[in-house]
Length: 327
Ligand SMILES: [Zn+2]
Ligand SMILES: [Zn+2]
Image (tube, rainbow, N blue to C red; front, top):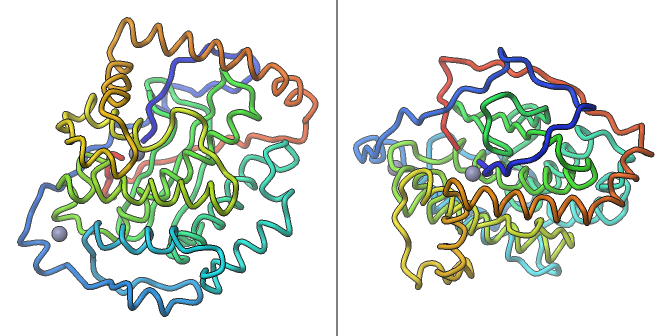
């Protein structure tokens, strides 16, 4: 889940009605090692190295750290060592720049679908096929929603919802939305295939963004930057995710040594956590927001020109029987 930063409302965007309020998801699982013993399955790098196309992960559940090491392995491969699936995904990206462009030629849904498939084939070895396993929605923020995106997982399906931020130019939103998409795909991947007995351990997914999550996020973000020249908007990444958990979920402050694996300085993390505190933090966030908007005035003019850019409003229903992880 991405933390939400305050933004001014826009009269031109559709507003969400009260009945579309998103529920706050709470995990129904606690650390339960007896569940682990009967559910853990091996997923070795040797097995994954043989993969040349999209695969179906064997039934059963895996430790999040095992899943993480597999995604990290694929995300860190040098360009000349990519497997066939990764090579064809990268070739498609290079041959069809328009499909992945943020200039407004595609609808938001088309753009998110294109990036979701690209990320899946590059980093998650085709385990997150859209529609059959992962659906991606883009919609206006409902009242009471204080985050940018979230992912709901049940069994081996997940739904990623990314919220429009009416205070920002759409061209800026698009890049942010794709960055949120990558973050939520990590949740979908670990949530759909990870063990639900031990996922709350800090070494696994912790309170959403534990070590396995952050290791994966760090590797795929670097992979996206290196292979696709996709750079996350400033200030969003491992540090923000961890700061959210520390501030909102009571995660303990990690040691310097652990933080260094994601290139996070203790000082910067403390500042991020402080940023979530009420009062001064909100003022700082509002000031930063105003500066960002000023810088993107050019983008706003571009948005007005691009009438083709559509936002389709999609209602989402919540299946109360589903396992809903608050991530
Ligand atoms: Zn998250
Ligand atoms: Zn387990």
